[in-house]
Length: 404
Image (cartoon, rainbow, N blue to C red):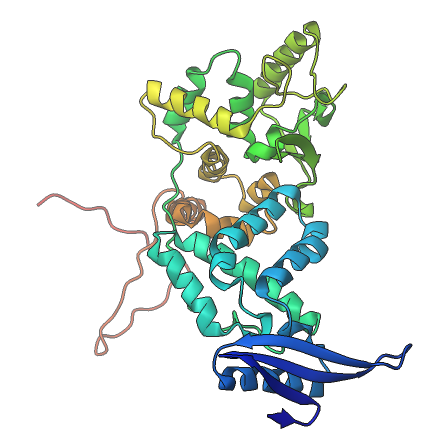
């Protein structure tokens, strides 16, 4: 079987060699061919040949029909993803692809992956009982890889387009109330008090407050600067950039928290100091002077909640608690957004929309009290046949109710 600039040669039962002429080398002027073995019926070999010729005629590289998805993902992770991702994010990307995509689609030729194949991979994840969030996160990673393949001219279309993703159910936010927060703070011991006090009152992420250094605290202004994060990758600690540029911010500390940190600094200076890294002057460290692992801190946090009969929330939920307390206290959403490092106040209100009814009711009461300190006006209505009374320049006050 032959076709112009391409041919299919039988190499055994259900085994075919597809050869395509790719032109001459610019330097040696020797002929260049693409050779690929296809296992299966001859129509499968013909389909592969047609795909290669179509890619070549469209001016795109034919590498997409020669490498597998496994090979492409490895190259994409090393050359495109790793340089722009933090170590923790890179490990997450690599893990999702290794666990859920490569076992199902890894041996497929990159250009032969179809939307149905991608949908099948997602369905297998759902059948395994994985959460909608995990499926959607995996889809986001795979989609990013496929979009890069298109930019590299390895694909004509994105096979992740049109994928049906499971509905992401918004989990009810669990936080500590003001009364529960007071009970939590009262239960803290000297060794873990400062770190939880900062977490509850500033709304910082665990990776942010565990990366604080003494130089980040302005004692005169009573503020703390968030300029870095702490992460653990491949068993090693390292400082990293904040989650976003907006995450670099200055937060005002409550007076009692500032005093707590001053006491902690006095204790720290009497010790040998932090052993990692040299002269890092970290605010929060383990008794051995090492960085605090957030998972270990979370276990201690759960223990405090359990011993004091408080709701079992996550360590990260102290951030939500700080925002909830601030909004409930009447702090403007714009200020809360700046404290949390959100991109906008609109995003903050969307995350904490459960507070809107309470805030709107209180706002309506405050405006009403401002307009009518004693009592509100009564707007009288008239029937169509009733003559409207003469308008008055002053709204009528409501009549007091009398007992029968």
